[in-house]
Length: 435
Image (cartoon, rainbow, N blue to C red; front, side, top):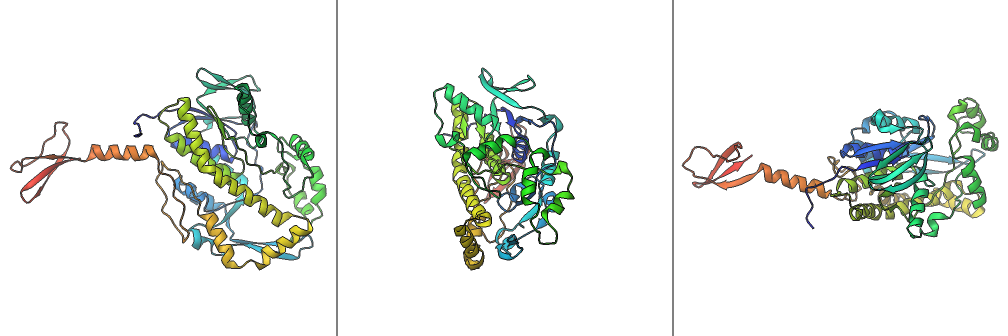
């Protein structure tokens, strides 16, 4: 079916002003789509630890004109050394020639600094703070969200960017239940994954999520007691670093890895948790929304399913790799320690290079912004072209170049539209080129 010249301007509600939510808002703004971000916190909290990004998302920052800003807050890091609790080196990870492979450095920085860069791109009136979502209901004009301060907002599309166990996801499941649609068990049942500080079972995971629903110093004390005596490579202990850190800058969070099956329902759609994964989701979803031709339930469902189909395989791969890496780096069983020793010390560099190259090939870009020229020796997987961009480019070509026969004895061409024209003559015959 040919692409239509018509394209709507939906009212988009983005729930969650984390890195994923801010990237989503920024991309919607670039697409000329009306949006509003709703954040449950009363103000931005400068929390978060060391973070890294690489070629999988840096091309998008280059498209947005933000690459230099990100590089200015970053350190280049193409390799790391791992130590055990007694500071004995157990191996190294990384790829020293990452720049040669991808054309980008592997960057590390403080998470709040990247957050500040993204936040500065969002107009102040596009973010509403202290807006905790209690419920969602369908309305004649789309979907309404009901907040804890008794405010109500309506949008054509609701995007949940508020984490794996989000209010939007929970309310989406309620909408599905009301319609007799059963979500997969995997989407509803709790699941505990041991990451860094190991968690025994689902009951403990559920308790930890309840106790850590907000980042803050009150949830830190028990974990600090567990790790304060750990030695660090440059002298002293973790406790020394903790004592030197302002209490309001220390936070404990519940880290979980889970891939949900249900990504959308009616006019509600979700993006993932985790910075890079969430930003990649935002890029692909923004591309799909840009190509919308109307806001009918069928068009929205098709766009959301297109988004899921493009992202699910890669998201599943990322979650799987993250679980494996967590067990290799932090697993404490005898088998996990043996595997860690073998992986870090005996896998050939050529094998690591192939693994890095395969991972680095996935670099989705914003299809409606000028594309970044490919760099490095690793060929990037192609970004799906925007149907709307291709259609608009075709219209521009038709408007700018119109060839009509003309009388070669006349000194100039004329156009009924009054366009500027130039005559082109080949062997006494010519055409009128209207520009």
